[in-house]
Image 1: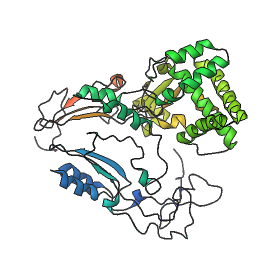
Image 2 (image 1 turned 135 degrees about the vertical axis):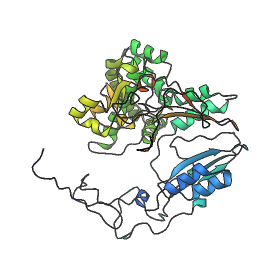
Image 3 (image 1 turned 180 degrees about the vertical axis):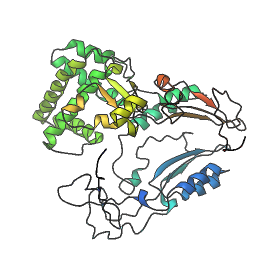
Image 4 (image 1 turned 90 degrees about the horizontal axis):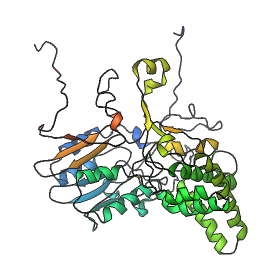
Length: 425
């Protein structure tokens, strides 16, 4: 409805686009140097992966991936099990890519890349299983591949579940993907309980002691504990770094909390007292969520770009949800990590609604000659908001009953869509 077009200026360099026209950086112009901008891409390699008939062809296809690096885990019908990090990995040498660098250091961008066979890889582990959950896969690759990795809680929980597993079924794998056990709670519940007792709230302490450490929609204790942990995180960040934007990864939070304990053991009582005071203040704030179920304050919505337009959302319902969501920070069944990113009072403001969660639920049953797939989407199979299958899976997404798929086409069929060229009749 505007009379004149809106002009949007896009600036770029030989290294990549200028991003500070969108995200200002105090008057300094920053360009984005990223392997995802390289022309080669990954399409040909992905098609080759799909056509691979054996391990050798699959590994050859993986070597062709020219994209930001990805974790690839594979199994063969002969019983081989392997991991490879695929993608394009620049040789940074003495360049610290975690910080902005002068264009004079890399005037034309990355000049050399690690060969594919120099990437982390592993085959046939003694454990007879491999797990990947965006965690650091190799200590030797830290710094060479990247430095910003999530805390390894999801990978550790998967490992805990698989270590003693035997004769697992499709249902067992589905349950693993829905696992909401909180290793944050397992690690710090004792501190929270002690803080609650110090402020005289035996009811809050008892709620946390009875909590089963799961972050399910019906869990009582998860909401109040999340509030305690988020308030404590913000308080520690303010105490350590003051006001302003800071990068405060979760592993640093753990090191600070447990490092303060170590200082106290060494004789610095005032450090321990300061931490105890912060824990007590966080417990007072957690009283607001005492007795609340997790699903009453924690939601998920599958957002569509056009859902941001209020009129279109009212007419077509592009966004699906919100609905009570499973999981939380670092659980195997994850939620939107941006819910936990803030370092101000909004960090512990409930209810919270995430913009997304897992993109699908999928289990493959690789029986030779009779493979089966089982899946579910958070919304539905169709992309048209007027189609009955656009959102029909959302109602059961929390429990995730799986739909069977067969490559041979002999599985159950709920409905069928036939595409015919025009004029074929």
